[in-house]
Image (tube, rainbow, N blue to C red; front, side, top):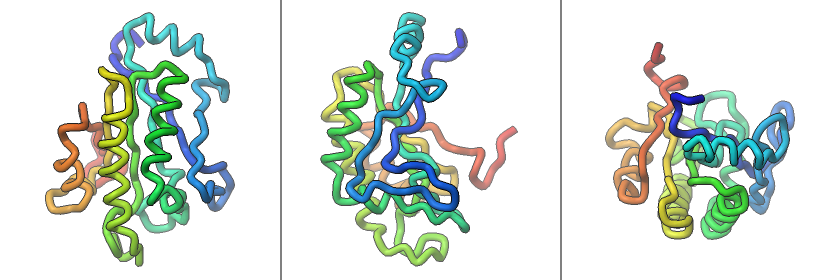
Length: 187
């Protein structure tokens, strides 16, 4: 671990896993994630911090919903319109766990009819991403880091997510693009 500067704890989510389709919290209640071996492990977080690592909480991930064919998870839908609640909860988790920031791992639809999906909540998704990003920047402790982990296809100029990231760039510290599930398969 000596060569790494950051450790990402994944994932803070608003669902319970279930085969076929995750069971979404219809009120977007976000659980504190386990750290290791399905346990809180504050001792491990402290060990990493003592070694000079930044510990980031990842919110979202594929289980919240994906924009690819065959994914039927839609837990993000229940979080749209609850931006303040999401910001408050993620900030609470960061503070309670003693973490250094948040990574937003949004792999869901962000444009109407994206990929022929029939998705009709593009404006709500875009507002959610903007408001949660800016809200987290304003609510987390000074010095906290804030990132997004967009999928590579969403980083194309002209795409809504690309434009959102440009708009909120001053609130972000860096991006962690997901090349492993995009157009280019990095080796």
